[in-house]
Image (tube, rainbow, N blue to C red; front, side, top):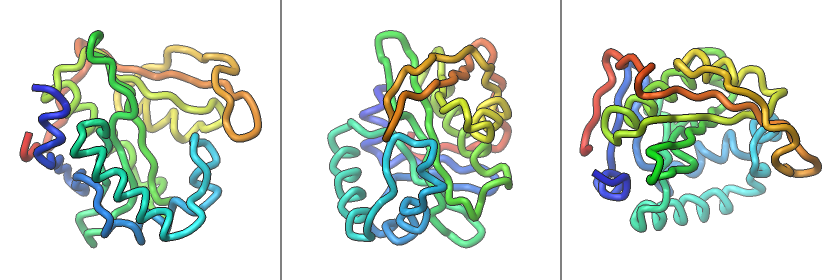
Length: 196
């Protein structure tokens, strides 16, 4: 089944502590709470959101992209208080080679609790078990050691560094790559899929 058909159904993934689902304009306040912070976007390709209205507009665009089948990212919801705390999903998909690039961002109030790893593990499970990918990779700016740890805790292996491979904000950045192959994947216990 194509990722377009899956995302058209408003898929949900549930883990012990999280629900991953479509983002909605009603998530704007929670998203803005982290997306406007420079410490969050320091290692990302995008700049801090400059207003709540910008975040609302962005989420309306995301809704349109879901309908068009061009956006494959989940909102990450913390079950204990139903709060939108970040995103995790596929930033890039290569259908011909059954490969995807996974990415994530989390509100810093929830850093260091294993939640990014839990979300990434769920997305990897979705990619291998429900979408049929052969390879899932993630990229990080080499100074972002915490992000590499999330990748490795999720079962990915470090593969190397692309030196000065992208220009971000004010300079060229070295980009590390971690990846996992379907043959090396161990199914995650307790992950539930709905509308997939």
